[in-house]
Image (cartoon, rainbow, N blue to C red):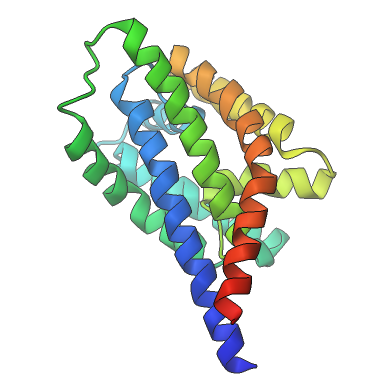
Length: 216
């Protein structure tokens, strides 16, 4: 029993890492188009501009907000927090840095809009797919994604509309605090949630198949 549990645990962690790699490929495509920050980072940007402290960089505020979300969830329902939550927090930035080094010579922010806009939408779809693998791995989810996951389950509402609402609230709060909203922000807000809802059944079956094969 212990051996089976251990094998299942590591399969789930590997699936989470796969989903994380896929999701952050999408994030990188999104960022390289330079058409606007994603909703959560608009919120972080707004907080940075409101606080206006040299020691609190964008990255540090992002980490602090992520930690705050985790602490709240530890009180509300700690079963949502797993080793994957910490992996998402620790590995997201480095993965984006690697992808950026590979792709930045090919995708430029000053490129034609006719190329950048489809890449933006593609990035959002890839992000949504990777995110659903992370969620369905049940090894833990990134703090910003957990907000929509928890609300969807607690309210008994479909993930897609809940994710859209959460992203719009992030963007609105960030904009009111001084963050910059661009066309990419709106595309991300309206594409990621519905795309993720479409991918959820496929990602669930993918995880189930991998767990069954790993149990043999």
